[in-house]
Image (cartoon, rainbow, N blue to C red; front, side):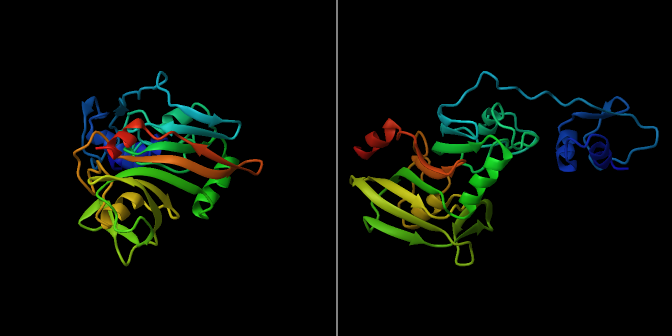
Length: 275
């Protein structure tokens, strides 16, 4: 049997692909010697041992809570914090690590409590589910486009129109698989924008996506030649942060109450507007 298949069979708490990563990192030994080849075929009497380092608990880390009850938790996600881990080898603090302290939903995965996500470099309102029934209710609203999201952004330049609906499909960029682009063969994507204020260099914008495509706001704003300030992928990286903030989220929580959760726009957005 191959080493990775053996590990997945006898330690099923990790997937075969995860075990392949652990093997390549040197966390698995055969007869006392580290083996870095997941394809290694084991002999009948080979002894396999594992030495996976324990992940940090992050028990001292916290995130600002906007609202919490028995079913949901709402936070103001800071810039630089991942919504959830990208894989087994990632041990940095995430929103999911924080939610795990409160939730019973998806606790055996790397996404406990997660029902939607914000990019690492985006700040603002993010809601989590504290049980499976609530997760289904919230996820249904996101998929049915019954959640109203409002973002505030500073963009480079001034849009041609002070208010418009950008209705342009978005697809993955085949040359750069981690990036997206406007693509006539992509998925439907719609963003309503309003210019709140402008200088000769920047514009303060309100953005309301009615769809939830990956990188949608960043791709749409770059496509109309006003990329979000500080966008390292679709614009210019010369800034202290990505100037995109999830300012408000309107959603129905268990019990049927429609609520609007808000997170104050960071002070730097107003100062950028004056430059």
